[in-house]
Image 1 (cartoon, rainbow, N blue to C red):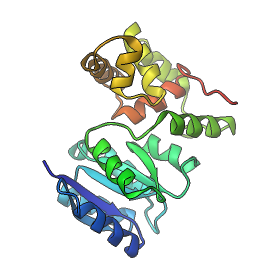
Image 2: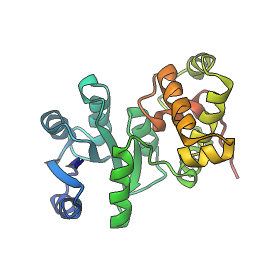
Image 3: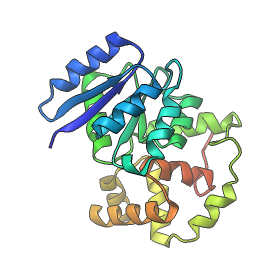
Image 4: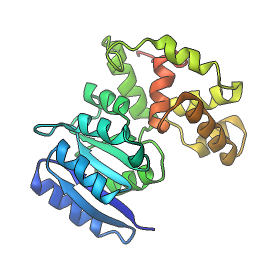
Length: 228
């Protein structure tokens, strides 16, 4: 199956480079481009891509607002957004996760890393490695930041009460940025069992994807950042 990709960046040269790279892959195809957030939302509605590569900073409607518009639309539930940023540890990256993005990638990433990110996002996984997750959350929260401008963490804490003990254990591992295979090895269960627990946790917590599970795990206090 061909992975359909939309490119959103105000730099035409960068979009052109991404298009050549993506279209060179036999399992990928660029189905649309946009230079600002308002335009990308229209393009996504018309093309229904699997993945959107979204620049955070664009003129007019920025990538954050565009991501919120996409992830809030039930008709676009199958669309996964990967934020592109110059800085991988950045308040805007946190905001992108709160907006519903599946993860983030630095603009300086190697071509194979970018292509891998598209495939990971299309598969419904989160682009949050253990190192990136720790750096992102620790740096931002250590500076006194909040995920969404003052949301009461007790709201998520109450929802966590619906999780089973095993689902909580799996959620902790997801918050560490671990894959299903890694979690399965750590908890001595099968990857399929881990996937089942992840899906149930997402349903109970109304999380769009694994990236939002990470946000909820920290926001609720289930997992706390370590400041080294």
